[in-house]
Length: 433
RNA sequence: GAGGGGGUAGCUCAGCCGGUAGAGCGCGGGACUGUGGAUCCCGAGGUCGCGGGUUCGAAUCCCGCCCCCCUCCCCA
Image: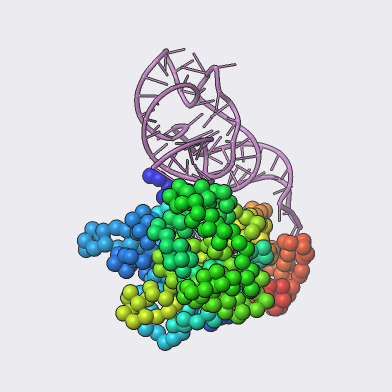
């Protein structure tokens, strides 16, 4: 019997879960501040729901799909949370704008490596109904706040627009194999200009086109002013103009937060459903890929709903945030229990008193443990301190006779004596509830 | 799918010019009899990834397979 989970799947110990829950609730709290509400959808969907949404490679190689042996129907595990949301929206037709978040697992059958798993959590935030840049800007603003709240400082949001790419490469340069070209320029950060040059030649572009292309993508475009240059370069192209205008508006709404944003003509993103602005959050100090990604997908929902609904969203990669935060020393997995109080009993008689105190404390909302192993007082104390339980209560003959309780605070080594009747209040002063 | 590294106790690993297994941590218990995350003692736990070959004898040498990690690809 193999006890290890399948490749790319993981078990989480309490110490892992305590950190995960903290990260997730931080994100959730930010989402709520911007007025997004939670939904849940099933982990599997009918295959047809996913068909034609993500692109060829995702569908043929990366999705977990299977034929249900009982019904003979094709199903698949969800690949992201955006497409299930689109289905959900089309079924329920909530009022607009529909602002929802969804934190849950998704599955991708890729080769696992650092920061990449086959089962991982996404924290996805989307707005349906608004075609305007303010909806995109709100998500970027939210993202910046979320990153800051988690403790990240040195990050950048790379921003681009699919229409700009389309206008320049498909219309102006009339390239036929754009997908390959996009892939090549997407690698710019990794392999540099010379690397991209080699890739483009490999694709079969002539030298003139290669040079022109490199000239365009190698320019540093300032998010406020110089992106307008692009419009000047292609004055008659509507897609370029629309894209740039949209991006300019987003930047304007961001105000001082625009310092976290950079215009990246080499940002492409793989998923097929994006139609306008796209973005990715990159950590500068750490090589882990992007920790979040998203964009506008104005045509996706129409495939389910019949009518057109513009939408935009972003997904945070929970494991990447955690892995990166751990590596940067922002997060620690030292806590292995939520328990706040351990009650040590010295004798069987004292154990009865300990039991009744435990009940009282639990009734008052404290997280309490008491010995269940009939262990010695010494072993109970060892257990409490090994688990990192911050507060210990000791019950022995002395307490039984005087009706006073001894409280030991592990971190400071401080000892407090409290009358039995005042115990709850003394504890409440020490542990915020 | 391609390349690299690795699989020995729950974890991290040592042992590998062949003589059927060790450490540290962890885990369980005890001494210490009330404020000690201490110290000391004892103990449990391993088909040395799987199968075959060479050999009197294989964790160690040879072959095949499986799995894990890293990189590429792609992405969160």
